[in-house]
Length: 180
Image (cartoon, rainbow, N blue to C red):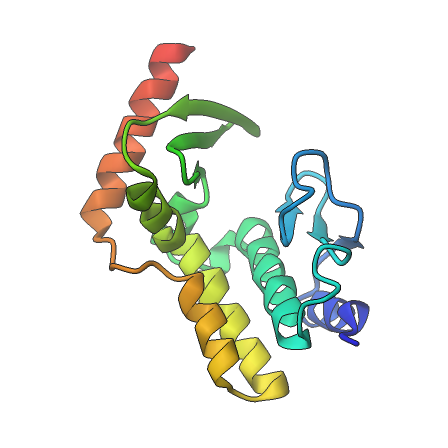
């Protein structure tokens, strides 16, 4: 049985972060593996949803969300590319959000699900969190075909050039400004 609290506490203490761990997913995230809420500084893990998952998978999602906590709370540790990208959320269906003055502003972009899935997975902050999670889990339980498959699943199928993100972020900015 994976000990979420042990690894959470170790990460929190090692990184000197003021974080909370919760297994009660917020509304709208009932089928998500986890999420991080910057306002409450809470790492949410859907332990009920993951109860049948192998330990390496549980660990992967915990470390993924812990990495997001550092990205948001310690931006000075990350590149400008990651710091810029973390302002944007791009969903599989083209629904997008930008954090403006602490609030999520929503817009919708046109395009197919394959396109937006690849964009979502390639977002610099998502790719960083997935790579970090993979490395941490590999360090704890060792590498395996299953762990590599999980990591590959959460990475973009095709590399996404920075110029594409520049364009998508500009579109989101334009749409949000015109909807205000």
